[in-house]
Image (cartoon, rainbow, N blue to C red; front, side):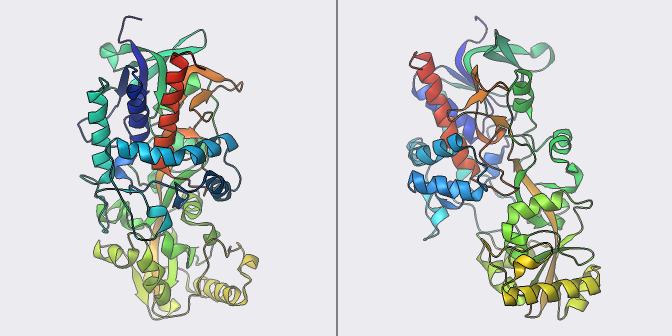
Length: 470
């Protein structure tokens, strides 16, 4: 134990990893963070995020009983009860702890889920604008805090977990001849998922990576998953991702992603393919629709169809609204006085589109959208008729932010083995973990709050373990 001996080595320098590192260092532990990215503003999903700490679009400081019900509903009852309980009971303390670390929050009016937005906030504009915004400022503050506490942030890729008699005793990091061991009493995997790895995305989700837009930083390449698997870790369902509908122009126009997301258009109106046919229940939300689009034979053949009332209503009310931000950013928006003319502009089958809209409008007016094929849920997103010209068609694609599935842990972040017991000395937090989010392709709980909460909990358990209290 003479080479780089630490109490804790954290793999990944996003908000989950830095929360774990700082909370451990606060308790007197010697900590190192291994981050494969370079420079003081290395890329990660935390930096790209909108900066809102919430639980399934609810105030993360709501009573735990309410939050547990919210998580259960958002994930269609699939969230692991222990993980849901851990998040619900600790989220409020996590928000306060992050503030004590120097994070600053603003509130956005009376919007219940935007009561803790990292400041300075992101501007209400399309495109990628993260430098100097709340998440970026907060991460840099956490790095500074860690260094003041004697911790280190090292720009090295983690390669292999070190094992002795079934216990994790450290990690090897670096490349080639420069690879070196980092012995530790505990290792925390916080590398952000596997959405940046085309082979893993195809293997576990059956998705053609080239036809889905990477909406996040794309830096999560599955290192943690690979290393944990070699130690016999248990994994949750790996099928789904968190993401949104985006403009198809995002493949060629960097001004239209990661915002505006187009969920408010497609889920209040309808989503069709080139044949003019609906293929998904839009009422289940944008994350569900994005997952469905990504799995089509041709994910680049879908459209949001809406009328002027939707364009001027929900199209304007999103946090970063498609109207007018998509147009301002140069995104494609087709507009016509009739559905037939709209079909001509887009190449959508006119007869199919007209029949689909007519059937949808009739079902919406009679309150029988559940009888459509596919059904259209009336909750949680209420459908609106498509009757007021002009009519709009916006070309869509699925944007993948991060993976829902991953390493399965207990409520304190301990990695569980395939035999159902914790792997001694090995923890995982943040988007590299699974078991909490997912549901049927929806089930978004919240990336930042999940990372901070479980980063804290893992660090606190490690400290208790080293002190011999557990």
